[in-house]
Image 1 (tube, rainbow, N blue to C red):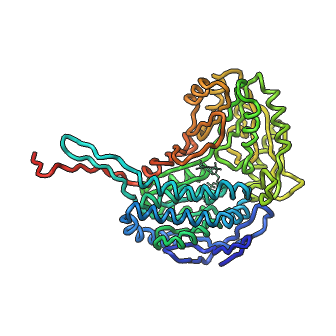
Image 2: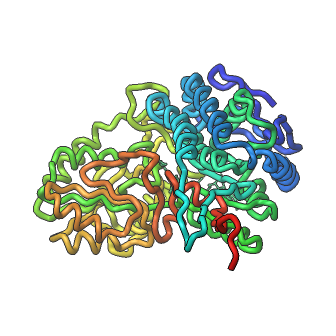
Image 3: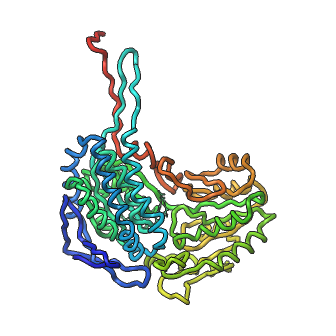
Length: 485
Ligand SMILES: NC(=O)C1=CN([C@@H]2O[C@H](COP(=O)(O)OP(=O)(O)OC[C@H]3O[C@@H](n4cnc5c(N)ncnc54)[C@H](O)[C@@H]3O)[C@@H](O)[C@H]2O)C=CC1
Ligand SMILES: O=C(O)/C=C/C=C(\O)C(=O)O
């Protein structure tokens, strides 16, 4: 089952116990660029997941005893190989998920390498100094917990996958990874890379397939000790229920409907251009500030400037570096986005810009869309669209801005644009979000705590938070030599 994608050979079979393994069933990966099938991929289920978890479980017995320095060396080797193959990974990812090639080349694939490097280095300085407890030595260790099941989505497939895989491996867990079925190909290349890096068989496994088959089997497997999921809220609920009988700790990074708050005292041009950035990746970004809240006194001016800039967003083939945004990931997702927009229009809302497919381009290209002043309970204002669709509202003062920002069941991110540092601090304190960016967006570092509140997730990742999740933290007390009660 080999396919050539943009000149790169892809083996679409699973990667289990250090070998390629096929399945009776397969599926096609369809490129969002032209809706053409580009590769055949094995569709695993219960049996393949069981084989992968057993391989991972066996490998765990050795991997858990591998020294942190050795584990770190493997991760650095993987990072080296990712860096050497940035171009290959970038072209395959763009063909497979339709995100911009220029972003994959310059930002996303280097970040994939960074995911491995960062957690390798963090592992080596992970330390809780011993302390004295009434003459006894207290020692805290980060013990690897076992096999981690990792399931991630398609909007940044390799970056989001490795953001979970790298810390799990660093922590001494072995991994069974279920990539997204709408963009499964770079996971296969990652398996090749781990093999080339000499990672022992069974430490990293990939089971390709549909969420309801391979994904579901992974979440209920009794030998899984950690489940890490990035994706939508409905799937998270299903996974939590499947994991419950085994009492498996969960880490969830889910959706958002984040506020983008613009105060009249902000740097106006910066506010407008940062707001336009919320259409990046054709709106398929969990962190997107999709509710733009603007102070009444500058609303008209902001709206005019925003629309002017939005008109100039260049949409087209993501392989061409001149374009700013590409297509939606798949036909079902495109229809889902269109459904939100059609229902909003049917309710009486008129889009200020966009409002439908890009008919010049056809296919899966959906125009950047802005709705103004939806009703408080409007679906378009409350539900995550995960497409290039933003809502614009205004507020009269800081208290109302905060109330509107927090009027959501999500709590992933918030953007605050203001020229007043004290206000930035006040609003940051009050806003219900795991990540707050003041006068900026997506300023990212892997030492940060990353995750959401409410329906946006469970837990935090980054730095030691990742190790807290993947490890069984052990506290040990050592009595002094010859101690008698
Ligand atoms: N907070 C964060 O860091 C991020 C969150 N997301 C969220 O992801 C969502 C978009 O991704 P989608 O792929 O549409 O989400 P999804 O929930 O449909 O799928 C995500 C993954 O779950 C798998 N899956 C589906 N059903 C399953 C089941 N019953 N059991 C186990 N696995 C199953 C899929 O195969 C896929 O690999 C959005 O809600 C977005 O906000 C996306 C990126 C980052
Ligand atoms: O930086 C991260 O770890 C995650 C970022 C998530 C996105 O960029 C996304 O969902 O698009």
